[in-house]
Amino acid sequence: MNLLKILELFKPSKLIKSYEILDLKTGEGTIYYKINAILMNNTTLFVTEFISKDEIIYSYHWQDKKGNLIRRWDNAPYHKVETFPHHVHIEAKIEPSYETDIEAIPLIIGNLIS
Image (cartoon, rainbow, N blue to C red):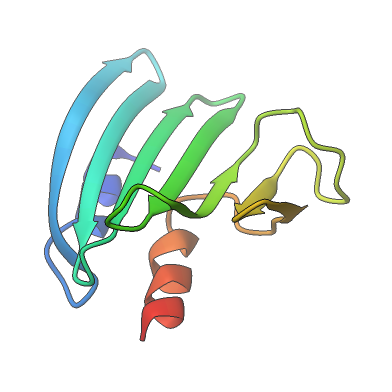
């Protein structure tokens, strides 16, 4: 995914109120970025991705106004689930995750808060 397509996901919409790019680095075939997005229900989505031709390392952390975890999708290789290393933290539970890129996350969140 290219940088412009990523940023297009965060433009103000029915889901996204605003966003801030905290870090952005590009190199030969790589992108690393951190974005904090404030959603219309005043929850926050923290997005971190490193993308290269060989791998994607990601964390999509969604929390409420008080800082409590709602969900976090990531691929840190610490939890043995059927979709290893992809998993989702739902409060205190770890479950398999089939959502493995940022394009799916706004759709899921939008469905959960509507």
